[in-house]
Image (cartoon, rainbow, N blue to C red; front, side, top):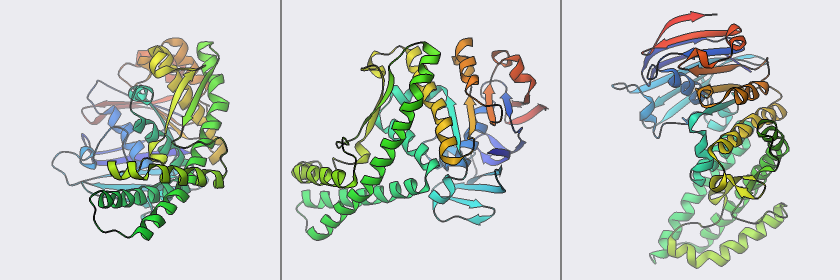
Length: 370
């Protein structure tokens, strides 16, 4: 999979910019604050319809403007054009100029993996950070996952509204509440099974990568679902969830929220039995995230039968030479990679020889070398 070009209008600090990309290595360089990371973010948003940095759509739109537009041409088995228009309260996506009604039908079209400095928040941050990561990766693999997750959150919001009514002694339809719970369980079963399968796949690849980089054995990722998945058959998960909802009903009414389901899941990075969040050094944590992201490359290949596009946002300045080499070792020559850096000296000379160099300053291209 290749992103041939990207065009952005009124996005972050850019009024208008169009870049043609090399099919292999692309290096965007320049001083801090010039807009390098914004270009990578625009690629990320084009693929996933949301940002890994911004809290709201409005954060993505250039000051004084009403909307931002990002376009890109993808070369795969066939050529197609993606477009996203971002307003302050809504967004619209298109494939070959045709409006796509379901975001899930769009998200799986362009697969990316991003490495950036804030990746450590995957380990150090809240469970919501890890759930967001898991949901974004699985949504790229499966549009059914995206659509099911979307349905799940709609049902969850409605069920929580009913719990508030019950808590406030308002009249409610008990039969409808039971149906909501049944539907929520059905959506949960699919989400649980997809997440567990994905983490199983990661654990077949991650430990070897971690050992290659650190020489340490025993790295693994532990899935922490809100129900037991020892027997992950559909019937067993259904029964487990029904029991949880029955047992927790009075507590849910008290707290006015649903206490069981995929929205309560977490996972942790472990070295043997030690959680790296609590017991790992910063170096061990950084390599754990690196191993996770590198494992994704193989998983995307297995699922999609194609290479993802790799985005490296100023990560080389965070790594020593050995870790840089280990990172590059796992990135095939036939993969498209877009790298940002403030200092070209941080990069290997052979890497630069084969790259397209794009110099950015204050939101404008001031130099290109192919």
